[in-house]
Image 1 (tube, helix red, strand yellow):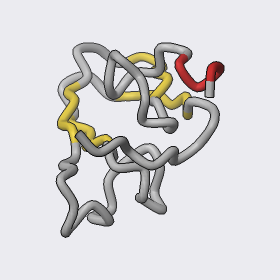
Image 2: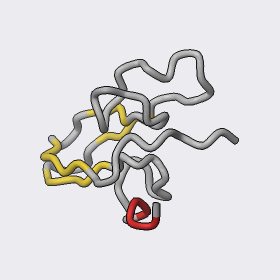
Image 3: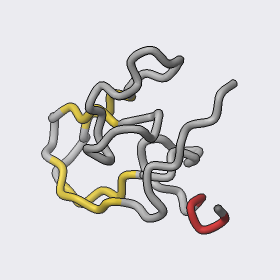
Image 4: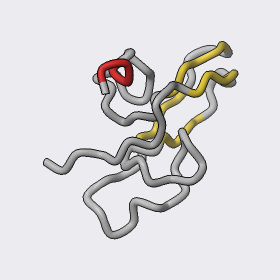
Length: 79
């Protein structure tokens, strides 16, 4: 399996809205981190749909190595 490109070295924390869909970049190539901008086209990667269960702050992964995609699990600290 191809490993994703590192899109950043720290999570992006933002407010999410309950019930809203967010399309997380899984390839690491998006210029709109942490979200998909279509840069994965022609690769084996696809964006990950994530729906907010409640309105709150979320730390979205940008290193693309998290085990809890799209949420940061601290993996970037070991890169």
